[in-house]
Amino acid sequence: MRYLKLLKTYKKQICFTILMIILICILSYFIYHNFSKSNVSCILNREYDNYKTKIVVDFNNDHTLSIEEVFETGDNAILKTKRIEATLLEYDFSVLKNKIIVKHKIQYSKKTKNLVREYVESGYSCTNEKTINKQIKYQLDNYATYQEVGTPYEEVEIKAYSDEKDLRENVLIDNNSFDPNIVGKYVVTYRLSISDVRDEYLYRVIDVEDTTAPILKLKGPKEITLKKGETYKDAGVEVSDNYDKEIKEKIKTKGKVDTSKLGEYEIVYEVTDSSGNIASVSKKVKVTSKGGIIPQIKEEDGITYVDGTLVVNKKYSIPKDYTPGLKDTTYDAFTKLKQEAKKKGYTIQILSGYRNYADQEKLYNDYVKKYGKEKADTFSAEPGHSEHQTGLALDVGKLDTSFGNTPAGKWLAANAYKYGFIIRYPEGKEKITGYQYEPWHIRYLGKDLAQKVYKSGLTLEEYFGIDS
Ligand SMILES: [Zn+2]
Figure 1 (cartoon, rainbow, N blue to C red):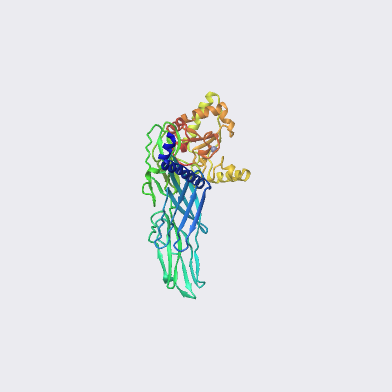
Figure 2 (figure 1 turned 90 degrees about the horizontal axis):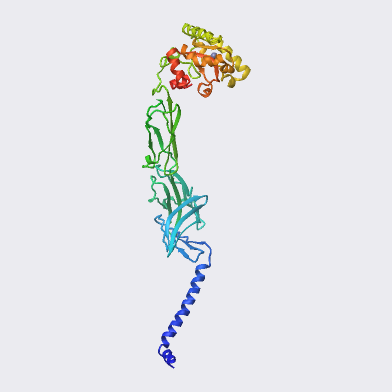
């Protein structure tokens, strides 16, 4: 009885509660079905007159995301976006054949979930041609153009006519948003206004791009020579770019110089601008036992002297009429060497001494005929490039690489400097000298220089820091 009485008293409240529960159930069912039914889809509505577009997106995981987007390219060529429940991260459009591809990146968050979705919507088909009332022709030469940043605005050809009547004066071009100095994509609107006919629009997208690479310049010389143990100071580079103001920080340096070790080092500087254009420049650092920033190279009567020493190699030649014969200093020094060798039990004879230009020419040409130029160049000098023409070089012992391994050959290599000679084309230095290993070819430099070169373990080219 007591319960019945209670029921009677709260009749209204109970009915209301039940009704509410039913309502909530219906609503939940409705919401559930609405929210979960679709896959990712994009609906694109386009209104012809003012180019309004509407995109509706449904995501498949219990959330609905609707985006209404207005793409206005009517009177003012402004891209406007109206968003619901979403944050637009990126908005970009590019031109591909007859379509403008619109790319969005949207982030939306719902309570605890924070999802990033990316989708590409294409379909803003553009046309560069319109026929109005079957009489009026309205056409743009091109609706998608590219131009380099910093170059002035360029107009395309516009065709607008009706029965041979030129209507180009009726076309109003709006390029107010265009800035040739800022990389980006711009829409230019062409509005054709004729009385009694509705306004017609054509659009052109101008893609302002930066395809110019930065300019990178070395601050110091392209090649420097340091003495072993000397401190290397990087002079660095200068950089400028047509578009990026802050580009200095983007310079990357590759390579290191170890002045404790003899050798050649390469330092490469590289920079990439904000548009992805790359520039690079490099420099060579040679570490030699002698050092010297720049070797003193002098030319006198067609003869090259490096720090006072006559040099002949594939790069530096001597004139045809230079005919000194075998120099006395060379002969005398060799005689002493030969005598000392004899004491040790080695017989070292001169096989070839002085050769003039004509002799060398004949010899070289014979080798070329027999072996081909490429091979001949590894062991024979072109006329004017032979050390034998200087009167300072000799071929001794045996004309065979095996000579280097004989006791006489080994003694020669280890002691020649004491008499003023060096083995001019050592083993393992073929790439530097340009010649194969010749344990028999000795070059007179004088005792002082020969000793320095020998102790450095370098070729004459490396020692002087000159080209071969
Ligand atoms: Zn020789």
